[in-house]
Length: 211
View 1 (cartoon, helix red, strand yellow):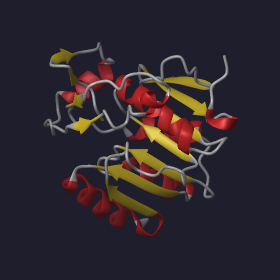
View 2 (spheres, rainbow, N blue to C red):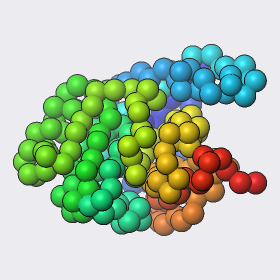
View 3 (tube, rainbow, N blue to C red):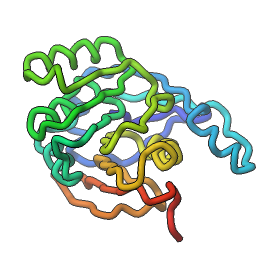
View 4 (cartoon, rainbow, N blue to C red):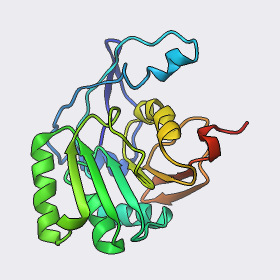
């Protein structure tokens, strides 16, 4: 989970839900730097000047089990799905999808130790045959296999990912985000869980948004 960002040398801070603030106080910060310039390259294809490199540094905060189940149910996850969790941490979303719904899951995570932790968690849960964890930058991952994508990211990261999601996911693929939306791409559904909204989208045909 990513919540604070260093953007063009200045500290970005957003008012967070109380549930997040309370959780963050009890976690040691594991800082990560993710270059976003590559993710934003599609803007150059539209004739716009690519932005300068942006670095995002943020603490790692897990998603509560009750919220995970709400996210998976909102996406109507079933055993026929392939779920990708971007920034998968200790693997709990991927593992819950496999254990509770029989879905195949792929966790994308940069931190080596968290991937090892996720693999051990999957082994203990008895779902190793259904799940995979990859040490990758999710901006560079191939998402075409996914039928469901789950997010718990900064608003700016959601927006940076949006062109990639629309480009790579097949029509009808489902996207669920905890707490943060995708700007002017209005969600098909949204629910409130413990003071934080969960947003749901379905990828439109042609990968383009209507007016």
